[in-house]
Image (cartoon, rainbow, N blue to C red; front, side, top):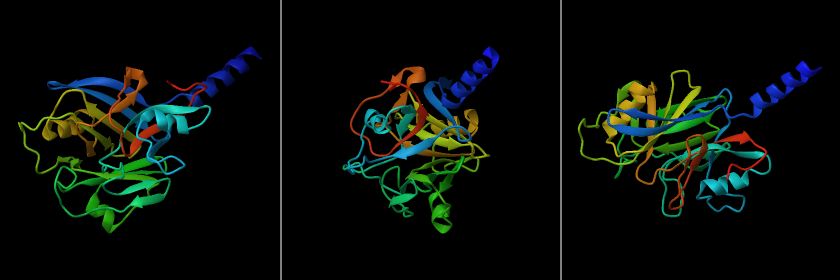
Length: 248
């Protein structure tokens, strides 16, 4: 009887425990914070607005919206946004599209083609070049568009320059070849695009990866003591986990 009860408790803990793993790494001369998500176990979502239509803006407001018994496992800003916090490009949340995909080139990092779409499906995800997405849109439960692509089928973005002096804090997302392992990273030191792309390709082993944003990048990762504050954010990516108490 005692053994059966212990087995039941362990099984309940296994179900409710977050599977994402956050850690700190060093690649060449820069430090990074990295969170890995296993989509066969983790509930990864996009968040933008509350029930009244107001943008959440902060990780804590997202977590407060989840209700009793649920909390954020980790969260990160999910792409570029306008002054009113509306997404710049494609945005789909829980199957509902708010903004269409943009395929034209333009100013800034978003318009540095090829850019891409991060698409979350049932137990898998993809990073897809934007024009390929527009030509044959997959069914995405959640999707966010940003740019530039960091890694495209194992190759770095063609306009990245080794040794570039354009250094910044950067965050991005990569997906493994199976589509079940999603890796988020934020640089803790300023890096250029070439270094950031190689970090995803050569260290994190993601054949496709997408830049999310620059100096406004922020991370919530209690496993490594991160809870970044700053100006209100637009779209936010995060995992939802069971938890008797809020994480903060």
